[in-house]
Length: 223
Image 1 (cartoon, helix red, strand yellow):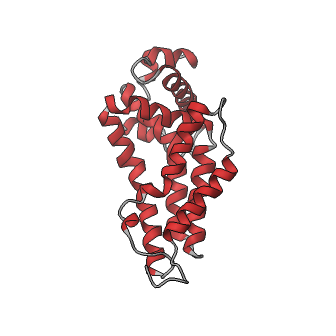
Image 2: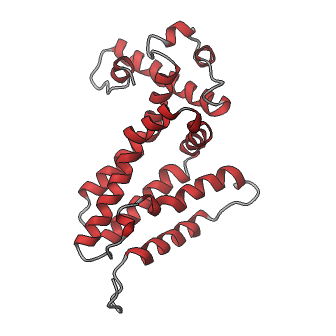
């Protein structure tokens, strides 16, 4: 994101009325851009269409963002970053059993991504158009995804170090932990109306699968 949009999206606590109005306008632009991107796709979205939603000219959008790519990056950050921050904070500061930590991380992902229509729509867009715009998917990985993966890796290693989890390759590929949740997102987007999932039972099955794969087996000498 450009320095202009980065500064625009910063916190405005204690700011002047003018700054607060600017922040409200920025929020409106991001909401409008989200709707345009998720309805039309990245390629077909035009800045003038975003501006029309909030009664701004295309030129006025450039006051906040240098181009469409910059705006898209800001939308991604505004939608996904709060979830990643929650996951990172949990992994870094949780003090209880690691099994409980993993369940909390999974619960957070289900609550804020799988069950959240807005974030699910954004993920659908990234899956659909990401391969055509590698610079955008790389941004998504560098700014967001790698931090979530790192938190999972940290949690798994914590469990191994504490003798709660068995060592294994899952520590090198923590994406496996959340893979069923991503499948749930895709399933709900494609088949949610005709073949809905019982997400509560699905989540419990997911937890069961993960814990059976991670936890030390007290009745076995095999680790």
